[in-house]
Image 1 (cartoon, one colour):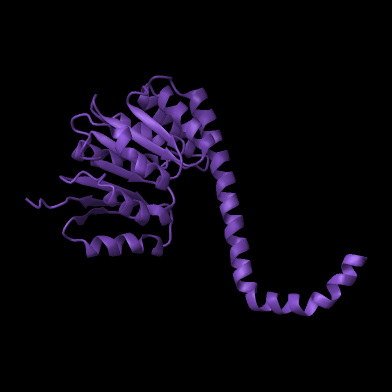
Image 2 (cartoon, helix red, strand yellow):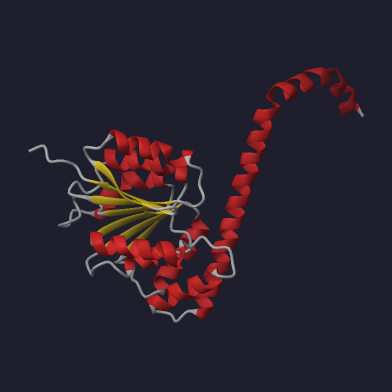
Length: 258
């Protein structure tokens, strides 16, 4: 009762604040709810997909793992890019023939497996996943596919935290000092441009040529506008190689200053 008595004099101020900021408050509430739902659905989806693949695939057989993922995705919501985008990804990997690949967004490990199976024996994948549960499940799927830790590394952190660490992870070995040859971005689309700029700043894109693949998951057009504007403003080193409804490939090459 005393709380009610105290709140009565404040009602006019509460009504005024609400009427002035109700749109912003409602928008913030909707964004928070959407973020929470995405996180919950993502975890549930990854756990369910992992359990299905783990139980039904032939362990150690890459094609069996991918086919089991595709089978699961026919009847369940999934974060896998699927065979259609996967085939485009395969074509790019075969054309680029990368030695060092960077992936943002491990998810259930599907894309990681597709990438690893086409890399040469000396090739290596670094894949970044923000959620620890998802990262662990994705790593298990990669191992179940028959790959070893010497061929890949899963970083459990944000892309912004991962990028400054990549120089030390790539190491001083021959062929790694020039950065990565292929980047797959399948994480938060709002991070695509900041992460691309960070990779440039850290000189992690191979100057002789690096393909950057941006996965489109029903995002709004404005989510890619910043990336497109940046590319169009840097025609000296960027070009659009492939542009599909579900995927965009941009090519980076830094002109020699010698």
